[in-house]
Picture 1 (cartoon, rainbow, N blue to C red):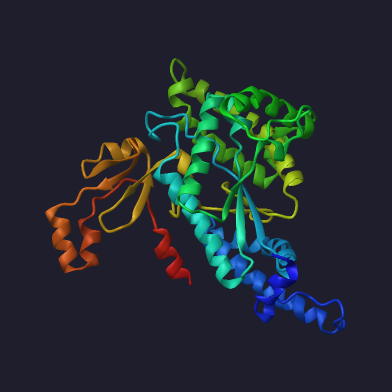
Picture 2: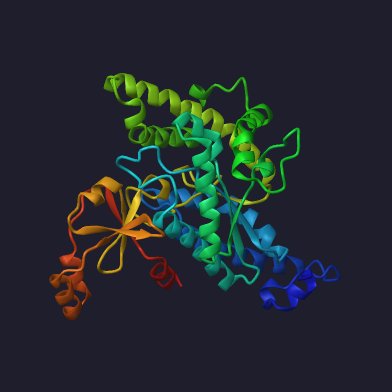
Length: 394
């Protein structure tokens, strides 16, 4: 749709600036744009990482910077563009944490959450918003013993899921969006051409955006965002790699190795972040990592107060009262109150078994359902269903 045609469909607050307007009118138009930008950012913040005591303060720290980015879209009456490096591959720990190598209900809930965020933005800003997911799988998968083929299969299944579920406000980047290959890639990558170029991607990424003089220990010590990411890497690597590198090593030796891997991930992450910055200029930067909140919005892909908020590190379970909770696959599997649900011939999620006690609770009111639900340990966290989250925030 031509820009002027779009402007005719917008409320007065979104009407494009007319170059013939006097200078005294122009500032008023910009103030209105900032008001709209605040409304958009408030919606984004509703989906932000909120499980820390200082989460609100961290979000406030980045508001001026985030508003400046959103203002550029609002003033131009164009779609708000956001990018999120995420969805690399399923955890390497298939014994305890996840079902297998492909996306399941956890990823579906995460994509639905991002899509719902954009739908809400469209309600207050007609041009709407879109999130581009930039998979960082090939940046790290070899460090974590994840085959290139598994990374390809995971990414392709995500795209299929988004298409089939009608998540129209989500887009996915491609390899050639991030690095310049000396020889052009096929227009449409297949599994073979993807795997054949996986090593090339990593090599070109590090050659173009890596820093040979990067002192990662100094970065960890002096850069708060880097330190938070480093600590996050260490936490998940210890559990992810337990059945790969943990056997035959002392606890001290294993943790020392995990620290080394976490630093290698950071070094690669710096190169990847540089590529993202060049490839997606002007985008509102989202992140799945805890941060200071000044340069990127830390997102919660699964709406839980504590525990697992990234779907590739966990599984989800549907409770009898309609709530979703997240946790490790093994903790749900060992819980006699839950059963495995299969979709398309593969395990998708867990579901609480309906018992006579639940049926009685349904008749007596929803408050009793909460009491009848089984109690879970700290590695299971409650997720608010997306439709309820939207209703509560609107």
